[in-house]
Amino acid sequence: MTDCAKQEAETYRGFPVIEGCLAPGGTPLPRLAARIGQTPFFAYDRKLISERMAALRSNLPPDVQVNYAIKANPMPAVVQHLAGLVDGFDLASAGELMTALDSAMPAERISFAGPGKTPDELSRAIAAGITINAESERELESIARIGAEMSLAPRVAVRVNPDFELRGSGMRMGGGAKQFGIDAERVPEALRWIGRHGLDFQGFHIYSGSQGLNAGAISDAQSKTIDLAIELAAHAPGPVRKLNIGGGFGIPYFDSDAPLDLAAVGQGLAEHMPRARQGLPEARIMVELGRYIVGEAGVYVCRIVDRKDSRGQTFLITDGGLHHQLAASGNFGQVLRRNYPVVVGNRIGQDARETATVVGCLCTPLDLLASKMDLAPAEVGDFVVVFQSGAYGLTASPTAFLSHPAPAEVLV
Image (cartoon, helix red, strand yellow):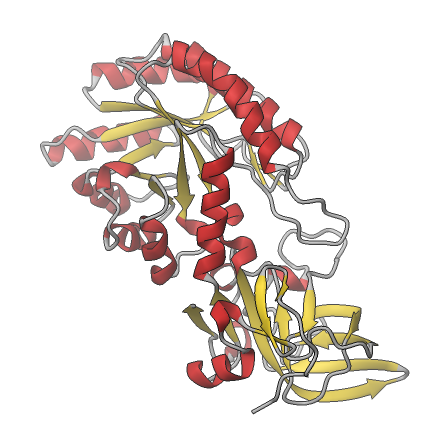
């Protein structure tokens, strides 16, 4: 077992540090690896998840609900933990539906979004009594047909593709031509269709972008979203009971990223809420967050299995790689690759430094976890830790690539 360095520190990026060793959930890495029985692994710190939810509750208006987007991290233990902390779940597949229904979250607080839902997925969602966020007119027709066959009135909300987007967002989910939602100008007719066919209308889902770090841009998008919902409500077959204004709250992945000013986001939303309460008096207003809740609470841990020098450059070769943590390799949305925060996890606070490149075990030059990074000098057996790994890590990675073993996941 690799020992921890002896330098003292209390925390590093929010995680406990014990005798120079990162300690997710209070357990130093060598002991945690022994407990799990393998590397690589993902570890999610339940205390950090709970603290992030507490920060959201204290900064957002009290009448704004917080839903968890399961796609960010669908590990059942994480979902179970969050069932007692959030107000609802948003999901995007039948697999996530089963995970959500296995939790303590009531079905009426679960919604299902995403283009291309299959008849089987729609049938299961209708039978479960959750709200389906309809992405197209054709999907509405399928929902109505399946509901009639089951003698049920399906709960539906209309996902709206607005004519605006979240400025500076990492992924633009609205504005222009999109596969997501019904274009705003076509929604009034869709609402009239819902009324004619007796579906149980719930409200709107309007999501303009994700991974935003600019509080002003998020507030502007929220304001426009509320105005659009009020405008569309005039065409609805009944009162708007749910308004999902999306999320877009980002986390800092790189040194140049400034953390989101959550207090400013909350203040901006508080300024918009009187207008929302007046225009949509029966609606529950909710934000949908995934990455912001769990992203910074997770680490990916792999073990150094070789150290080599090649023409003046030091390489640390690990038993992990892009097949587990694709985003950190730069192959999941980065145009110009930048390093995620990476450390030698059992040498936190060590004064000695070296420049090293951390690579995985795959036979491809794309398998890069850190390029020419300032790190504590590391040896075979040491642990490499990739931070910001709590969201879109394992399930967003090509785990079958080159047929290496899958990593473990733990909630600690």
